[in-house]
Length: 67
Image (cartoon, rainbow, N blue to C red; front, side, top):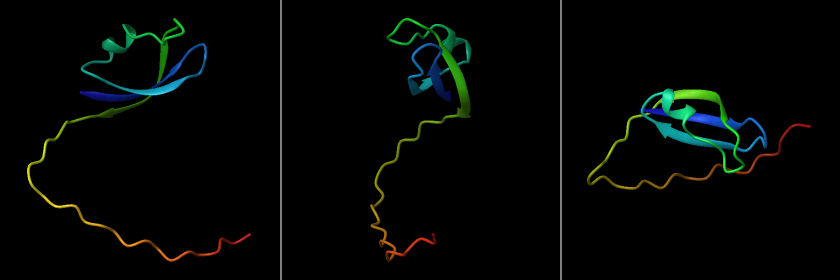
């Protein structure tokens, strides 16, 4: 599976999509009716976990940013 970041060729609406092949993107259209342009492609593997635990991370102390 591939995870894509796509943008509409007309209205510039950016979205993410998960597809089996790049050819599947050609069949998708934006709600405005125009086709998508692919911005980035990443391999995607769905993972299902059973069990485990949630670990809460500590917040960093607030720091002032340099001007």
